[in-house]
Image (cartoon, rainbow, N blue to C red; front, side, top):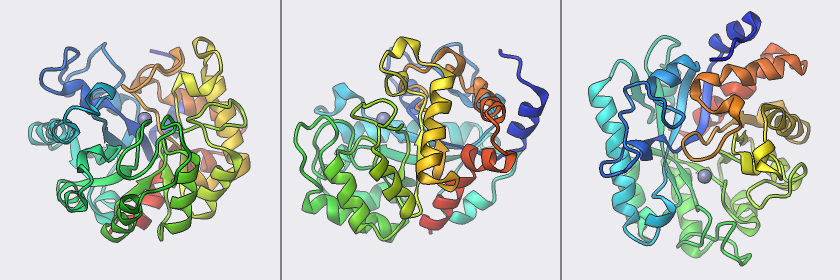
Length: 330
Ligand SMILES: [Zn+2]
């Protein structure tokens, strides 16, 4: 465990930390070779409830990512299995975890109370092209929808689809239905034409839960300055991410400093009210300084050392994501 400056620890622990993305639910799915119990502190992976608590996380978006190998198998069951992992945790540890479905739920979180979990689909393969299933997943608590992962699906093209088509008619209906139901639309992984379409048609702010800046590293998963500005102008938030491959062209050299560079750039282009953090814990290879939820205060310490005002650091750590979810959820 790193030793952090007392000032950084104090600021971090007193901030509302809202992490925009993790794939941790996949770590506890029955039958997974990596299966571990998220109630117990583990040395494996990056997150579990004890490490979230130690890292000062107050709210966390839990993605249901079917897994690249499952996209063509049964993504609906893969999503349901991940939701069940969350519900199983809720049953066993209601004092440690709570489901956030409404703005009221989010407001009700307290620093020492349970961590707020927001459920998310990463890619809409689980909907099988059927809008009625969006209502089912909404009833199951899903409040964030990443329209695509990297490939094409019924809604849109991901960054690896190899074409630059925008949203399909289904994708457009989906965005409208999300707006109506109070589900956040998340454009991380979406191709450029898709992001443009979402910016044009969404009636509510949107987020990119885990993406960095293309101006610093021209990776297909990073956002152009125009996209960053577009999301900010819509009142949304971009979550800077710990993914080494998006931080540095040489991913083996990716560091906390690279993350801070991306945050600096996002703040310059979007403004400090539109930048957050989406770690992608348990879905990526993070830099060594950030390879566990317990190391979250390293971000706060790094921002302090770069001269950020504590009030601005609080915005980046979570107040911005909190604000935009309060605005979009019903
Ligand atoms: Zn992702």
